[in-house]
Length: 272
Length: 272
Image (cartoon, rainbow over all chains, first blue to last red; front, top):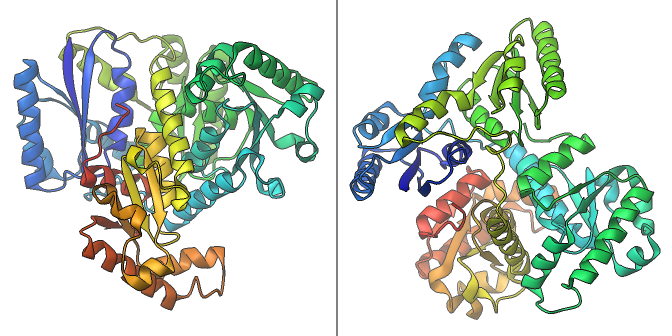
């Protein structure tokens, strides 16, 4: 079965998408075609959205699901006339929240999504640049500024996790790859020994690692299951020897890996 | 006025946080202290969360707001006994969605948040590595594989935007800094001329650019308002000369810049 889903917003649509994805994940066996329409902030854009919803309704022979986070009343009124099944996220929660907080909400268009704040922008950018400058063991002299230093074998997910930690949470994350030398000696490099309390390990199932490395370098020793098994075993031995907390990233998304690290390492989120 | 807000989930908590942030942004003048408790997936973790909520209720002398995306019934029952004001995100929407879709939802713990999918993981990682390999004009020979090539002066937000496009949307984004030579000639470098249809410009107000650069290199010519004004003027002249679409990133978050680029450039999101 196929159903079309729209995420419609007067801002980026990221809130509607995020909530919608979580809800749709509860339904198996339905093939959802997902369409995001951001910046629906005037009548013309609203009418255009309605026409796309109605076209999908005809094609699917079933009402599309429409998740919206529109604040503007006029735009909402236009959308309400579509043939979609509307899930109006804001109106569901703002009234009860107003009561709980004993305060009125501002309801200004765009306000809902505008998370522009120079201070948090700067913090995220700084954290991104920190992650880039301290990626892959390139530099170790700024580790005293790091919130966390991820350690693991090549392609265990260190770099994307550091970048996600920076962008989503403003956390300064460095990463250091365990090399053949480290893995042979089952020992930590000097640069890491000085910062043991900040280390966090990433492990991964050898089969998955081999698959990831094969994408990059097919038929190489680097991507062979023997090599991957040996490296992963060595890395976990080092983690255990030095009491470094670690998680297995095999069955986790980047969001999940990042959140688990923050939680397990007790790192303070710098963006609220 | 101060109020404590909890985001509680049996997964990462990112859905609860995202929705909560959007809703709270509608309330001015309240100082929200925000606490995320992820992976609340058993009775012990649930009871611990309740105790934290109740402590905050006493300290604030007002019920904390609790946004939750818990699927497990037992955990939800425990949380319901706290002194918090509960905003139960899933239960609000799953019933109506089941009706609209004519299907039952799975309600399995963790399911809601588990967006693990090797294919989309690989796509995001590939896109992150593409952004890193093609950052800051370092390489131009893979531009045929790019979905978009961001162009702008130093510190206009190119790198973080490329990384966000990769992580959030699986979009392959390269970026190229306009140098003094380009800006003096008001001309595009050769490498970019071959890919005009993929170019997208980032502009920024000179005052904001000077502030950002000052953080990096205080009192430098690079950070001076004269230099920033001249570079921004040059960059926009090049954008206009070659009909390159561009946006002003000054008052936008990374999410907003990324979404606007996708929309304006008609880029296909590779992650649904």
